[in-house]
Length: 314
Image (tube, rainbow, N blue to C red; front, side, top):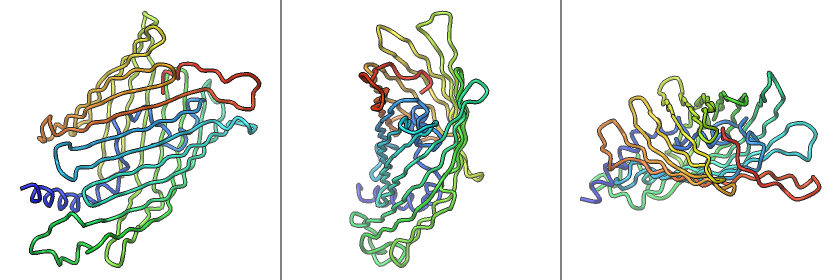
C-alpha cells in the first residue's frame, strides 16, 4: 500500500511538474524574505540579514514537497553610494525530483519621496535532477517517459525587481526566470522553468499603546495563467526587549495559515502551519520554520559593531 501511495504521488508530481516549474517555492514567512522573492530586496533591512527557512508541504504523503532555503544579504558600505549584495541557495525535493537554485542579487538604492527606492538584478544557476531509484512502475517499468537512472541538467537564469520603502509601508515587484530556461536532463527529459512575477506590499500601523503594532502585508505570485495571493494580518508586541508576533494569512481558494514567533538578541524564530481549504484536510497541511539573524555590521567604521533590534517592517 505504501508503494502504491508513492507511485500515485510521483505520477501526480509528474502531472503538475509544469505548474511547479512556473513558481518558486512559497514560504509562509514571505514577508521576512524580501531578498528571495525580489532582488531589489538585497540590503533592504540596512543590516546583515541572514536566515534559513524550511517548508514541509502536504505532510503525511510520501514523496511530499520539502524545501530548504539559506539566504543572506547586506549593504556594501565600503563603496560610495547605496549598493547591496545578496546570496542564496534553495533545495527543493518532490518525490523523485530535486530542484536547486543558486543565486546572487545586486541592488542599488536612492532616496526618493521621503523613502528609499531600490532596483535590483539577479543572476542564478538552476539545477534539476530526476532519480527514479525508489519508483516502482510495475508492468510499466520500461516506460520511456521515465529514465532508468538518475539524470540532471542545469541552466543560468536571471531576474530583476524594484522595491520602494517608506517609514510606514513598502511596495515592490519582481520578474524571475525572465529568460525561461529550458533544462535538458539526459536525452529524453526536459524541465521548462517559466517566468513568473511577484508583487508585494506591506505596512506598519502604530497603535496608541507604543508596545503594540499591526503589520499587514500581501503577496501575489503569477505567470498570468495561474496565480496565488496571500493576505496577511500580523500583530506585534514589544515586551522587555523581546518582540512577540503572530497572525494569520489567507490565500483565496488555497489555504489559511497560522503563525507565531519571537525576536530577541537579533534572532528571529517563527513557526507557521498552513491548512489547505481544498479538501486535503487539516492533518495534511504544510509546516514552515524560519530562523533569522540581523545585525548592524560595518567593518570599515571605527569602534565596535552595534547590536540593535531588527527593523519592524522586515
